[in-house]
Image (cartoon, rainbow, N blue to C red):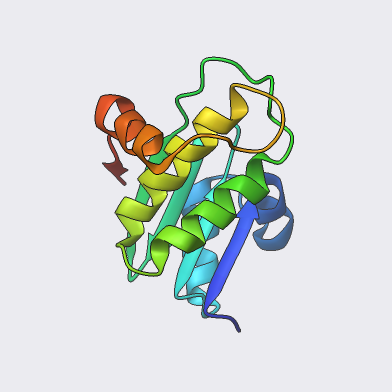
Length: 126
C-alpha cells in the first residue's frame, strides 16, 4: 500500500472502521504502512515496527489551532530525517504545542522546542 500514513483520528476511523487509535494504527500497519502517525486534539500517536508511542500536546491555549496538522506533520517529517520515531513525535508535539498558543505560523526556535520537550513532553509507549 504505502510506506507512511498520516491522518487524524476521524480520518482513521473513516478509513479503518475502528474507534480506538491503537486499532487504527494496527489495521493500517496490516495494510502495509511501515510508519503511521495519527493526530488528535490531545496529542499524536506513531506506530512503527509493531511499537506504538503517544505524546500529548502541552499548549496552554488554542488561539492558533488552525494549521495544527500541517505544522505537526512538517516538523515531524523534518525531524524524522535523522531522528527516531519517538524523538520526532516529541519534537513535533512540542513545536505544535508552542504554535497553537498564538495565531499564525510557528515563530519560535529549535531551542524553544527543545526546552518545551525537556520541561513537559514525556512519551508513553503503548
